[in-house]
Image (cartoon, rainbow, N blue to C red; front, side, top):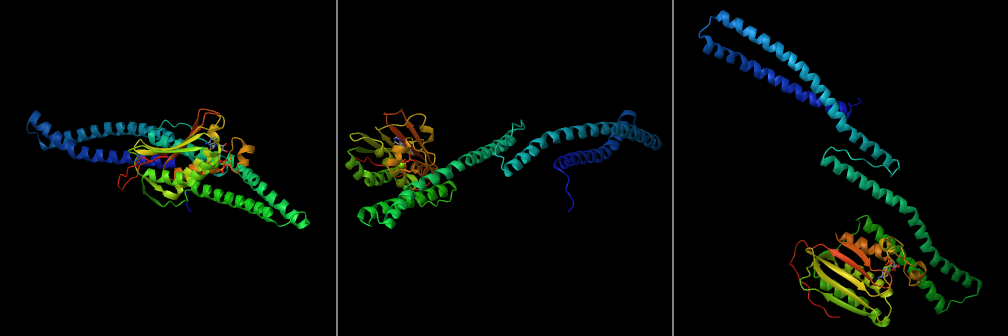
Length: 378
Ligand SMILES: Nc1ncnc2c1ncn2[C@@H]1O[C@H](COP(=O)(O)OP(=O)(O)OP(=O)(O)O)[C@@H](O)[C@H]1O
Ligand SMILES: [Mg+2]
């Protein structure tokens, strides 16, 4: 296979082609327009001249014109070649740098980044898109070993319990009574939930999650979530308040998935709010869309933990949070599901003891009726 010339050579050739086409046009136009013009000027300056003199003058004019044009064109060509080479080098350097950086990323070096090109917005968009991609890959690569370690750690605890109970049964130390079955069942359920959660997060993060979306009033989502968690709140003596501001627009959502997110946030709030406290589930209009928030008056989140709560397997207080049965993946799932809806999920807290607020921002439903929420009591 013949090797095609490089980008620099092709760009220079393209620019020189433009120059040659320009020169050819100039030559054709000048030779078509020049002689008749000369004849007209002669006629008006000296009147009728003999054909011999006319031919002589025309030759002299063409010779002088051609020589000056040739000298001009030679200088012009030299300048054009220099300019074309310089310009092309300037243009092709960032492209070569991009190719080198992409090669490094392909080879597994995710620290490759591109500097500013100062070649206009198109190049800036290209370099910033590349750098963002490399950032994301580097981040994934950095968290991957920890993720695998975390998964192994989460699997180890229930597996160790199951193993211990099975050994006890085999040794005759334990009998297959109700308690043993309950423990084995609970640990199996925990493993099952973990596997489901991990699979859900991966699918959501790979954008493989199919959402059954429809236009829904925010009040309906909020009501469904509140109904699901209310018995738990009653048992724990925590007050659950539900408020939907008038004018809250409808959202384009997968009902079950968003209710799952809200139940997740409400379960967290309940888990971290002592009895006598209050959890408020509210929906209100914001920026054309809707914001659904879950605010509690509980333990709050320390500033050093706040940026991490959405990370997989992150628990502010691992021992205590695990005791509650949590594996630290609930908020990761919640955020992935909200993002799959084109929304945002953020957390804020004034600090320990001051409660926490989780806010879901959802874009407005793109079509369908503008269903308005109604006020819903507690
Ligand atoms: N409302 C809240 N108040 C205080 N801390 C919270 C609140 N919600 C979440 N957190 C903190 O964020 C951590 C991560 O929450 P997440 O829901 O991801 O995990 P989890 O509840 O521990 O486990 P899982 O949801 O998988 O059962 C929690 O362990 C807890 O430390
Ligand atoms: Mg949780």
